[in-house]
Length: 139
Image (cartoon, rainbow, N blue to C red; front, side, top):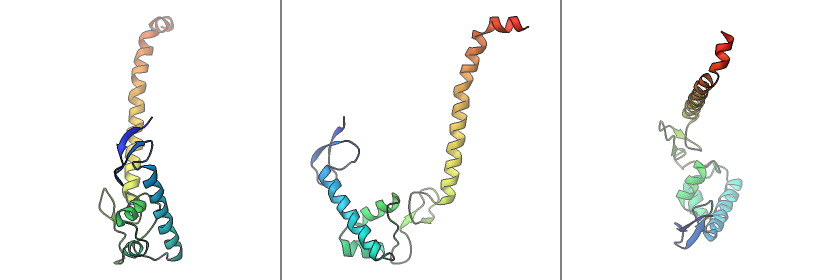
């Protein structure tokens, strides 16, 4: 069951299931996204400013879709308008540049491996105590 929320888009009360928008605003956002997608299909070199001007879609939505990897757009000055959340490098999509993404991935894998080892150690300790009779027989 979802939580009762006010839609940040229109203010209506709705039950949040998986999106933070009411169904009407989700539908409107999908229409906006389709308009942007169609415009980009016909105008692949369009800038964010041009998309906002022609489609009427808010810049913050276009930037969010860029972060989500749903669209790739640049600004009229040639920048992407997005920066890596770790190092600040200009990026075209997502939240992190490729270098920071690789570093974070390696750190997460290392942390996951350490967690697994720590979880296994108490099991080994339990087994040692539980099988004392077996160890004594082996000696």
